[in-house]
Amino acid sequence: MTDVLVYDKEYRHHESQSEQLCWHSNHRVFADLVPGDRLWVVTSGKALEHEDKSGGYLVAMWPVAQITENPDDDPEYPSRKFGYRVLVNETEAIHLDQPVCVDHVIRGEGYDQGVSIGRFLRGPRRLSDKKVRQLRSAAGADLAQKWLMGKEEGGKMKDEKPQDLKVRTRAFALRVIRLYSALHKSTEAQVLGKQLLRSGTSVGAHYREATRSRSDAEFISKIEGGMQELEETMYLCELLIDAEIMTESRLRPLLDEADELMAILVTCVKKTKSRKQT
Image (cartoon, rainbow, N blue to C red; front, side, top):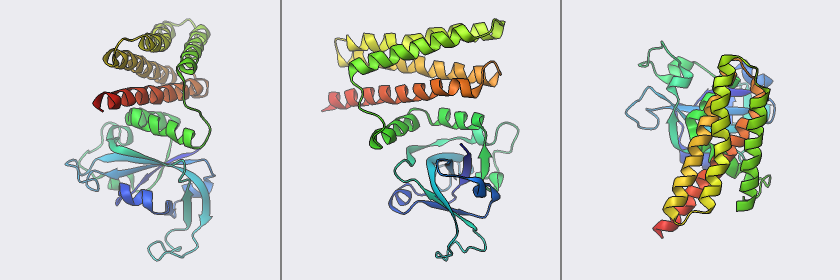
């Protein structure tokens, strides 16, 4: 899968959801895209009317549906300047309710933060797996929840029942245990592995305690405890990858499952808080 970062200087949330989603460009990176690849859309603080006008903000993730030659039917995007038209899979497109500042991911350290994000990028960029993980981490629960909701709407997932989630969090713990058993015996691997073992196996324990809670407040507290353990688990997995102790391909299924569990727990908390307010 190929991930590409694109800059939309005139991004508007309401417009992007009401109009046909597509992207025009003459950049050669788009010639290699296939359906299922993803565009990560950023805009500037200026476009969002934020005080940090030069900052870069993640606003959307668009799965690619089709790539065609520009048919030259839109005067704003003449084919001589925009050779490719990327059609977006609108069913699975994700728009963040609250744009997230990702300057630290895009620019890294040592770059002039006063330079606008558009001038800094100067066109689309192919993203590494590490950069994608960092963007997903920066977007946090909002992106994870929408990712899960998209799967539900697409019919790939069913609503989680309490017993289902008990089984799922136990299975998650067992995967963490097997992962720890597969780590080599270096000091770094064992230190990180033991922390991962503790946090990864605690998620299910928090959920089971939540199912026995005596009040909504206690339920929310227990679920949020499980969310903290999930966040730590994902962070430790990223460290194992970045330290080259384990490969991205080995840990990706665990990270994806952690994202989906996080989305489910976030939904549990939101529904409970909403019920309390009515």
